[in-house]
Amino acid sequence: MSLRSVDEKQPQRTAGLLYEAIIAGRFLLVGVIATIVHVATAVLLVGKLSVPALAGNTCAFCCAFLFSFCGHYFWTFSRPGKPHRALFRFLAVSLTTFLGNTALLALLLHNTAIPPVVSTVGSALLIPFISLLASRLWCFKAN
Image (cartoon, rainbow, N blue to C red; front, side):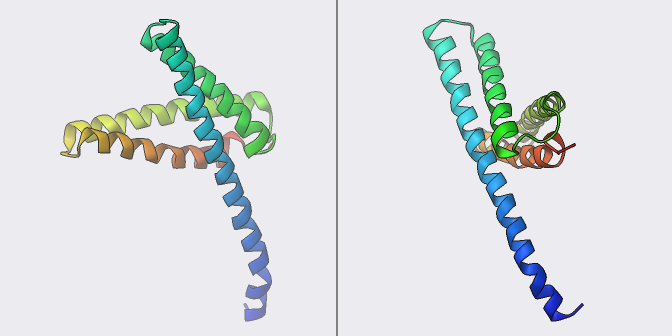
């Protein structure tokens, strides 16, 4: 491989990295807004409408999930593949990452001296990266 062929591929690599950065940025923005939807819905249901906390949180999760799916399907990944397939895959990833987050947190709380707040934040910060990879490579993969 000559030096010239390496230089000719650089614009393609740069464009590819820029595209992936845009996808990651969109994924992050949709995730932040979905979190706000979750919290606002939970506060409304539990705090204002006196819905029991677990039921309110479950409803809030469902609202946030639907917002997140629509945001990723129509904007982050721009309508890739069949919507019903992407929906079920995204649900599988969402539930799996939630369970993984919970399991990791339980391990950290019961097997380390790491303070609970640090354990909670640390386990929560890992999930978006896993979710982005799974979404990019599997959930929203074009047919």
